[in-house]
Length: 185
Image (cartoon, rainbow, N blue to C red; front, top):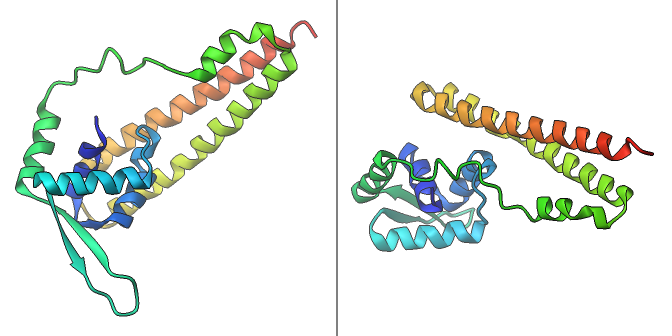
């Protein structure tokens, strides 16, 4: 997946401002695809240049002006083609490239206390991300309340389920790793 396809996917649901796209991205896609706000706006401009979306400048009296982005037929075709193309990255879906794990692998050169602290920090961040999934669940609930196609929400729920299980596994792993390090104390 690329950022552009994620944004096209969000725009296939409805037209949105850059702010709304960023907010929707943070509430849903960020759990498996990270992007900064500046990257999102840069990608929107590039996609508009390609003709995959259009934007309309909306003048507002009491608020700053805004741009509303809409997917074009060409953008919808690009998105549909991307969805229809067989996923070639399934073998790599579980690949991990982590400086954290690299550091942990070589942590026999440091103290157990330092490593335990690093694992506790990992646990805190994993718990924070796990709790953050409630925002994604709220988005799904909100989407369903609008009466839109429940078929979309089913796939959102499946993705959130992956995140919940992933973070639960991370917390369990960190707990067991700390227990191993404390065995000989």
